[in-house]
Each structure stands twice: as C-alpha cells, then as structure tokens.
Image (cartoon, rainbow, N blue to C red):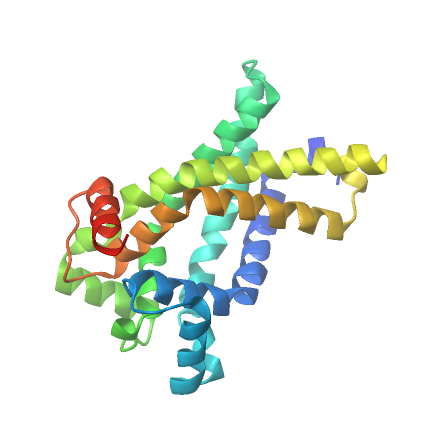
Length: 247
C-alpha cells in the first residue's frame, strides 16, 4: 500500500507483529543483559552470565520472562509506530523541518509508549531475575508487586526510562531514516524499493547507535525496577550512586 494511503491500523498491527518477532529472537540476549545490569559488578562479563544460566537453569531459561515481554511489546511497539507517524505528520503540517520532525516525533512516540505500558516492562524485568522466579504469571506478578511494595512500585524507574527513551527513540528513528536515505542514494533506489535486508541493516545500525548513547540510563532503569532493598530518590541519585560504588 502506498505510504500516503496507509491507514493508522497498518502501523499499529505491523508494529505489534514486528515487536513480537524481534523480542522473541533477542530474548536470550535481553535476559543476559538484565542479569548483568542488576548484579552490581559481581559478574565479570555477559558471557559469564550466559554460562551460569545454561549451567544452572538450562536452555529454556534464556526465555524466562519472555511471555511478559511479548505481552508488553505488542502495545508498546504498536503505540510507538502509530504515534510516531501521527506526531511526525502533525509536526510536518506546521512546518517543522523534516529531520527535526523525525527526531521530535520519535522521542514523543517513545515516551508515550513507555508511559502507557510501563508496569508490564517492570514485571518483565522482575520475572527475568532470580528474585522474581516465583511469579508464575504476569497478573500474579503485578498483584504481588503492588501488594508488597505498593502500587507506586509498578512505576519505579519510569522517570529514568522516559529520560532514556526520549533520546533513544528519537535517535533510532532519525538514524533509521537517514541510513535508508543514504542507502537509497548509494544504490539508486527509492526508499520503497529497498530490500528487506537493507532495511534490516539500517535498523540494526540505528538501534546500535541509539542504545549505546543511552545505555547508562538503561542500567539505572533496571536497577530501579528490580531493587526492593535499595531505594533511589531520583534518576540522578541512582546514576551517581552506581558510578561512585562501581565506577
């Protein structure tokens, strides 16, 4: 379907489906990353974390918490792609330059999706940790966390996440659009004519650039989501504490 005629439903459905596929494929890496981030420097490397999971829990453990991730990623990715296109169209309509509109729309879309789905992200992170292994379902985890730590705990770390996701989502969309444009110029093709492999490569590089830039805030987010014993008063408090204690 031509881009100018694409209905918002297509963005919503395509975003959700893409999220499920990508999240399931990278679930093992995501679990290793979460455990490495919250172990406060006790693990020497991500490879060491992966070896411990394999040795003590087995292959299936690499997908622990993925059901929660999939349930969360459907509305998250759907909202991200849908609101990105809507925000960008609105910004273009009022004369905002193309690159600025892409960056701003990406940031706003990321924050919108985070706020709407944050409790599901917190549950996903909790279920991926040893401390959250006793949770057998998302609904059970949501209820337990709210009962034991208060309803506000379902949004622990949301500020750090929004601070991180705004530049992340903005940079990701901006880099993706720029890379597609560069590839189109290099190959002599229109954007709509690019091969799936070329779009995939553009997405990989865009994600790498954006994730590297905001990674410290991702560490803070996971610590604030999963730590019941250490209470950080703010995103800055968490950043400074982690830097002071662990370097």
